[in-house]
Every structure is written in structure tokens, then in C-alpha cells.
Image (cartoon, rainbow, N blue to C red; front, top):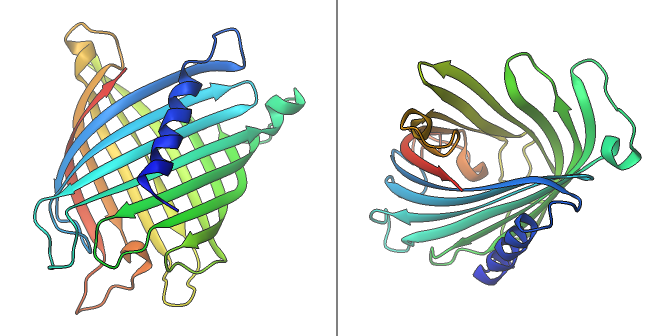
Length: 263
């Protein structure tokens, strides 16, 4: 599990989804590539370069989001450490409102969904086990003032392979906020993963990962939401569920410069 073959299969499925007929169940789709260069990462080597492929699509029954990260480490921290890694997620949410053709809303909630995610991890660290995690739980679309979107997904995590124990829970908000500045925009978007319970040797953690991006393409006269430059900040307490100690600091606070191109 968690092999490059599995990653390729998910990517092929996402690309096939993106090419579906306009008069079918597909409402819209979008893809992007992002390059990031950052320092001060913990547990993994301190300096990393990352290329990320993303796909998002909206359907008559729900939505799909998938991404694949490929990391390159600038120097390994220990002889057994690898120099590259791959990580990806494939998320599908099934909308009760769309499927039932009924408006489901209350307070700030504009829809209720069944949220599912598959995470897969492949690393060339010596002795490192590939791992796949399966997540499922209720999701909510929220209408909050000023936000382009705000999603809140809650999950039960079931690992397959690796060392993470079963029976952990996760809360994941996802958001986007646009601020007009001059002739262009600044987009602030991102997510946070909060794994809320300790189990075995694995500790709860918060993984907070926002981006602040300037729409350079629009300023240069190109199509809006086409070319972005900015920064990505990544805070990760007790990274990978490893408790931080004075001897081994696993609380990460890292910043990367990013360039993103939307297809």
C-alpha cells in the first residue's frame, strides 16, 4: 500500500474526472501546480523543495479534491534518511442536499455531506513503512461573512500499514478569503488538521497550513486566478504524532516561498 503505482492511479482518475463532458454530472473543475522552497522543517531534513499537483471539481452529487506532493530534501539529517518523499490525498464528499435535491441549511451551515479521504505516504527513509489512512465522517459547508468558502470536515481515522494506531479522530477546517488590493487580489487560503486524541505512543497534534498569495497574473493582464506568488506557513505541533521533548523538538514552524500556476 502507498506505492507510486497507487499514486499514479489516483492521479489518472483525477485527470479523467477533469475531462468529463460539460453536460454530464461535472459542474466545474480546476488544476494547478505549485513550487515551494522552505526552511526550518522538523523531524525531516530542515530544507525542502516541494512540487504539488492539485485537482478540485464540483459535481451534481458532491465534490472531489486531490493533491500529490513530491518533496526533495536538501541534505539528509541522518545517514538513514532519504532524500525524497511523496505524499497525497484523495477526498470525495457526498452532498446530502444535492443527492436528495433538498435544501439543507441551518444557521451558518449551507449543506451537510459525508466526507471521505484516503491519505498515502511513500518515503525513501531506510526502514520506513509505507502507510495508507482511510478517513470518514460528517462534513459541513459554512457560509461565513467575507469568505470565498469555509468547509468543516470531521473524521474517524483508520490506518493501513505504518505505525499509527486505529481509533483516532480528526477535525479539518478548509477556507479561502480574498482581499482586493489595487489592480489585483491577495488570496489567503489553507487548512488545519487537528487530531484530537492521544493513543499509544501517538500524540494529538495541530497541523496549520495557510498560504498568502498575490494574483500576479491579473496584475500583468492575464486571466484572473492564473499565476500566484506568495508564502506558505506550516505550523505542526508534535509532528507526525511524535511528542516533542527537549532532546527531540518536533514542534515545526516553517515558511516557504511559493509560485502557483492554475491551468
